[in-house]
Image (cartoon, rainbow, N blue to C red):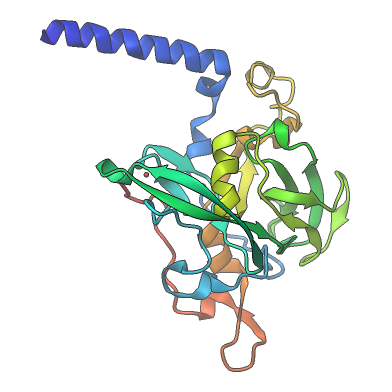
Length: 289
């Protein structure tokens, strides 16, 4: 029986590997599932928050990070999905302004071994999404069917030493910039939405609307046209700036280090690192677009 189990397991694994290879997923660089260290150079200007949501500076990010009924770390970066098995590169930022549609959807949750059903109210978000820093738009995806990120914008910025990095805001309802356009810190680049190529992603976004925010660095500047890129599924529409060629920085640590928080006394901005907020761990030990 033991030998049969081992043979069966090996067979299943070989089938899985073959299936992943055909989809292009096995070719993903492992760096896409590992947070990069921040350069020592820092930034030459403070970063703006991606939306009007300033709850980043509250304890445990309450009101800032999206959560689901059975996973309080649903919108956090790290291994926070599928019981800790799936890596989430970004942080999912909740809207400040949204309206109820009057409709509900029936959701079935795993409940970590204790499944339950719940009716969730559908919402429409209205928050503007902004450039966190001056930069150049390198991707302005207007076609939600191309990516699990739906409509998204990626902007190239530079550290103080001139080295490049990118930020991305995804699941937008509208993209207000075009590729090659120069944008300024705080400039509107789109509107929060619920777009995704994945049915499951759209389902969650219908009642947990959010902006998926990432920062990262290009792994391979010769990625476009490479065998790795040419065999991707879905296809690469963004050249070197395809998200599968981006190693993430921890997005919450980035915002806590470099963004500005409102002063509780005056409402004026002050550096976020003057707030006594401990950054989250690079990899979350948890048990779950």
